[in-house]
Image (tube, rainbow, N blue to C red; front, side):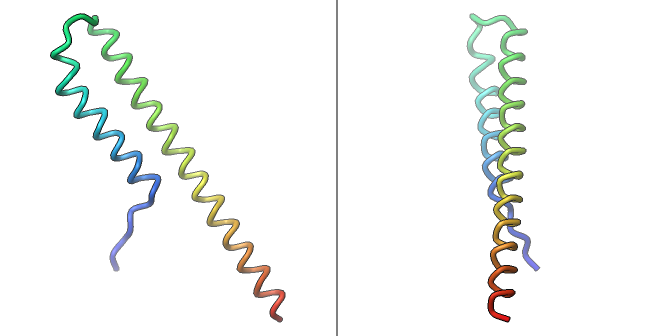
Length: 79
């Protein structure tokens, strides 16, 4: 059976890859910023993506739970 990637995982993975590629190609070229500031910015970006992933997972869980409750209520009304 083919497993479908969740929307929250796909969005977070895309942002993670974008941040990583941007950091690899653009941050070393810019020598005006100190290294510590570059790493702090990169880590903060990763933390933001992690928080986004957690919020989207929670939203998907609540949406699924609400759908299950609606189906359950419809089944009980039909009986």
